[in-house]
Image (cartoon, rainbow, N blue to C red; front, side):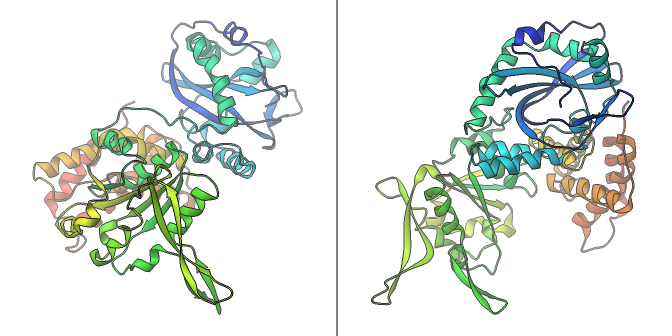
Length: 488
C-alpha cells in the first residue's frame, strides 16, 4: 500500500502509540503476510480507495484486535526490508484483505515464492492457507487512510495497539523476516499439546508412527501439520482393500493408447530427498484397509541399515544397454530425512490385531482420540477457508463435547467427529455460494448450519435404518439448539 507511513526504527513507530480509555487489545495473528504495493487509488475526490492487486511482497505481520464495547477493529503491524536490506515498520487499521475479501493474495505470493525456490515449504504453505484472514470477521469500519492523509496521525485503534505491543516483539520481526527470506522455516503456531501429540512429535524422523484413533480425530490433519512444521514434502497414499504391493512402486499404466510410468510413493520420496534435499513425510492413510497379506511390503524399505539409512526400492528399472538386462533400482536415503506416518481407525472392524508382528515392529503405535482444542483449531481453519466467522468454532467444540459425553453415558449411539463438523461447514458454504446467498452474521449462518448438521447426523447414526428415532432426534435437536446460539 503506497499510502502507508513507514518508520526506520521501532522507537519511532512506538512513539506514535498512546493508551486509549475503554479499548482492550488482543493478539490474533503473527506470521508471514502478503503486502500489496500500490493497491490504493483515488476516487477523484481525494479519498483513497482499493485499486488493482499487484506487486505483492513478503512481510512479517502482527494482527491485534482492538475491542471497544461490541465493536472490533483489526490493526496490522508490518515489518519489511527496504531496497537497501534495512528493516522498516508501519501499522494500519483493518481492510478487506485481513477480513478475507482478497484471500488470493496469499496464494499469489506463495506461487511466486515457490518459483524462486528461496523460502521454506512451510512458509509458502502458511501463506497459501491464508491463516490471517477472518481473525476479526465482524470488524467495524475505520477511516484510517483518510485520517492519516488529512492529519498525518494514526487512528486511536492503531495508537492503542502500539501502546500495548512490547518493543522487543516488534524488534524481533526484522530478524524473523530475514530468516524467512533466506530459507529458514516459519515457526508453527505453538499451543498446548495433548499427550498423544507430544509423543507424535517426539518420534518425528526417528521412529515411524501408526496413529490409531477415533474417526475424525484429526490424524491426517496432524500428519499434514507435521510436514509443515519440519518443512517436509507431504506425500499421501490412500489405502484400500484391493490394494497390492506393486502400487507402492513406480509402475506402467496405459491411457489413451499410450503407456506411462506412474511414480510410486517410494520413488517420489527418494526423488525429493536426493534431488531436492527435502525431508519427506509419507502418509499411508487408513493403513489397515490394505490386505494384511500385502502390508509386509513396508518391511524392507523401513528396515534400518548399519549406516542409519533406508534402502528404497523405487520400482524403476536400470537397463544394461549391451546385455539388455535390467535390475530394480535401489536408493539409500538418510533415516532422518524420511518419516512414514500411517493412520487407522480403531475398533473391532479395523483389525489392528491382524497386522503382522513384523509390520507392527516398525511403528510406534500412538492411540489418538478426539482432543477438544485440536478439534477447535481444525474447525476454525475450515471456517476461515470458507470466509465464515471463527466464533462458530467454539459452538462446534461445545456440540462435539456434548455429543461425545452423551455417547459415554449411553444416551446416544454414535459420537460426533471433527470430520462431521468440517463437512457441515463446507456444505453450507458451498450451497450459499451456489444459491447466491450471502450470510454475513453468525446468526444468519446458524440458520443453515443447524438443519445441515442434523441431516449429517441422521446419515452417520442411522443410515441403514432410516430416520432417527424420536428419542434420538429430540436429544440431538436439544444439543444443537443449546450449542449453537448467539450470546451477544
